[in-house]
Image (tube, rainbow, N blue to C red; front, side, top):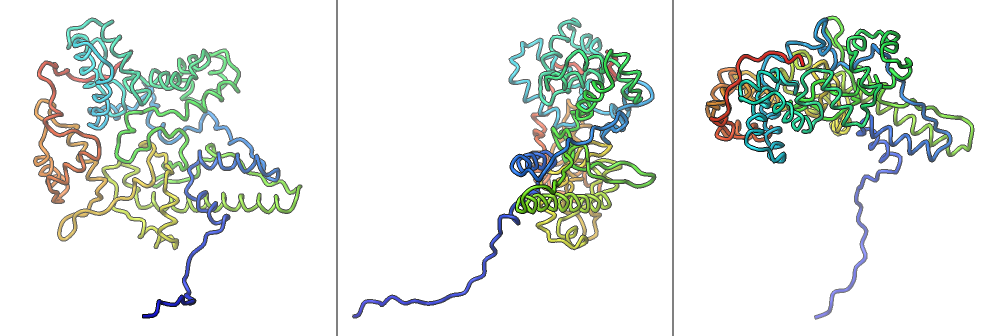
Length: 440
């Protein structure tokens, strides 16, 4: 038997090879504002044909949309934001953090009472004197425990008012100097946009006020809202902003988050060509992001108006077909990018959600159903938490969509909400009375 002889043959295969320019272009497309700024800084450092100018400084009237309901004519707050208890995801986060504080039994009772007093914004909705009376503790004892709780992330939770919320965040940033304290002591002037009067009241120049205003503007006035299902945590400068415009919405790039890119024509030809290529990539990224953002807001107008419970079913394939682009383009654009709305800052990716229901039942987005589930749990009697089976039945009555108990359990676990037996309050914890806004 002869041994097999080697054979030489030709085969033809197809393979997509991405050149370096295309790879960079794809990377830029999926980069958020902070990442894009770093990329441009690196490019400008290597290419003298590229020049970066700082992002335009916002004026005192240029508040991000998430601030639109914070300042009111009186009290510097929107009372509607303090109408109900905090969501269960926020409470679960705080309770987990309490385990690491090594509190004494009396301190733990005070901490639990303060946690019960949290509002959806993350602020306290009950005066400390009321908490002290309910747990039979002195006011200094309650204040000492509050000081410990205010060290829990995200900075700003357990604040008693807007000024304290912002002071906690400024301190966490290492920016709570005398000038910042002075500005936060005059929030009424800051809210009114009276720059000259604010500068005089604080003994600062207008330039010093504007520098600190930019930092304040990037803070989150409602840090507890980070625990909503679509919220973007720790995003100080969003990629897109959406504002009410008559009966609709306008959406724009957040120009204050990006430096201005200039191409200098002097220099060698290769450097100039590379600089123009970077400029085209950035322009393509911005225009595509704006195009996708506008279509998302058009489809999710009710969610922007009412909140995540009104999210409509939406998938990337439908959006890509409507815009005439590939689905992978949509996926890259929404990766890590955020949209600032009057109801907070949201991840674009989290606004996509499959449809539930149909076949004779109403159609609802799964994300909207998760949010409604969290609201049901937030409204439950803490002495008698609701089982997953009962929650499933309540959702059927509220939405008309049949949902299995195991699906409720999955949605609950996805949001970090413990089961009913772990949500039950300890019998030693007194129930607080009618909640009222803290003024201290």
